[in-house]
Length: 242
Image (cartoon, rainbow, N blue to C red; front, side, top):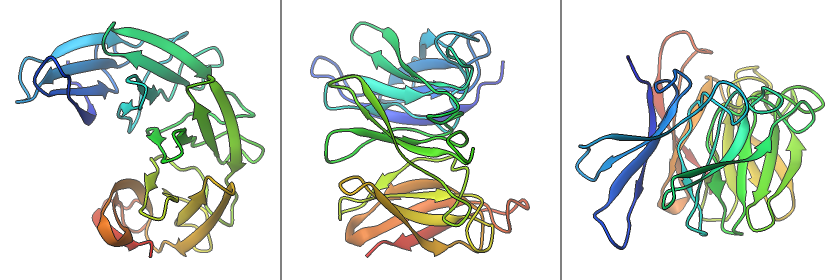
């Protein structure tokens, strides 16, 4: 079967050479898998499979977030108790998968990206739908207390329906993008401050940008996206948060 490889995360053990861990959108029972391979990209092993309903399935644009407690965290776009995706924990030592939170209409639905652990130690992510306006939410997850908190909601003015992942810049703030909404309706680049729970549209994107890629020194952030509202073109973008 053709497998959709999404993102790969490097991880190192003290008792073994570095390994590659990642998730597939499909494969396994056709609802996605968690897999690993050695540091050379060989000896691929399927470690866990997502199921069609209860534990969550079909992770989209997702990679595993290696948290400071030694566990990995991720998101599925579908499945769970409400059918709207879940936040899960995966212990690579015991190969144990645990559903930690079920997304629903109020707290956001259909997350289409990954989690990031911010410098305050908590995990942050976005959903593409749900919330009061059904345009998605920003949420926080504290794995020490197993607490999920909806922090704020997306609006038509500042951007809607984000499918991607936050990037933390050197100023400690989180940056993300929306493919729709904003003045031009082609999306925005926005800044979220976890300390004050405030977010601001920093620029009205003339092109539909869909995925944050990486943060670099000097406050620059690099991203991938499609031009002209997804008309088949693509580009790499640089945004200077400073």
